[in-house]
Image (tube, rainbow, N blue to C red; front, side, top):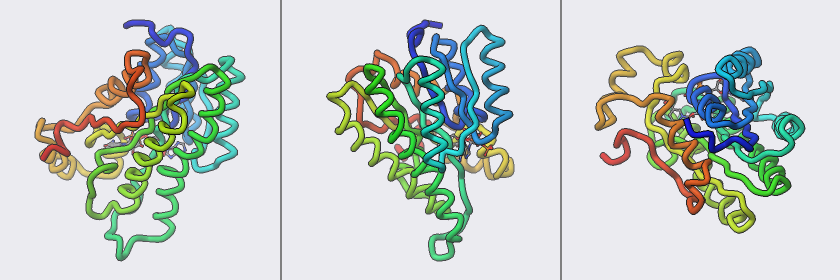
Length: 251
Ligand code: NAP
């Protein structure tokens, strides 16, 4: 694999499971020093260890992205560990309760917005200044197909992901001429614990059928797009929302 991230320090949230694991591994394989940040401290440590076993560089960090102070500490840790911050993926996310908006539980709403929206804001709030200090950088915010279309019984998730897309566009306008590129990625349904922990096989099969490609995605397919957007090959790409969805939204 090309070592195009050799001099880069990266932070990936939600790096202990699913899509975040794939992104952390690809960034490290391409030469980056990766901070694997997750609510699940043991999972973050296991991913760092797996990267080190393959000859890569990674350090775990326990973080709750809905806690602004904890996110600040995560960014400080990355800067102190690697001497700067150049790449960030705000990927941690949760599904939240399943209910129509007229009955949506208020505590569930607040939790989804706290993690999936506020968590991304706290990331940007601390990563951008660190990248400006480090001579520039690139950020990917993990949205979803549900950043552009609705989905019944997932109102909080859909609202948060739409907001992440808008926040991404705004941040890119603010920092494009200062050397920080910011994009959003919109995966279709992907084979991760987020799905397998919450849905039975029959439901996952029904979701797969909604993708004209005929299946759900793999974490590595989301990582490939994310790492491209973080790379210098995407030097004119900022402020945009990129789908990796097996034509889900083309229907
Ligand atoms: P996942 O397998 O559940 O992984 C998410 C990771 O984030 C878990 O390790 C989780 O820890 C962690 N996390 C949860 N809340 C956190 C918090 N407050 N602070 C820090 N870490 C936290 O999910 P995934 O499918 O890889 O999803 C990753 C991202 O892709 C999410 O933003 C999700 O919305 C988005 N996405 C997923 C799909 C899909 O179909 N899988 C589709 C579109 C978009 P715990 O396990 O301890 O909770």
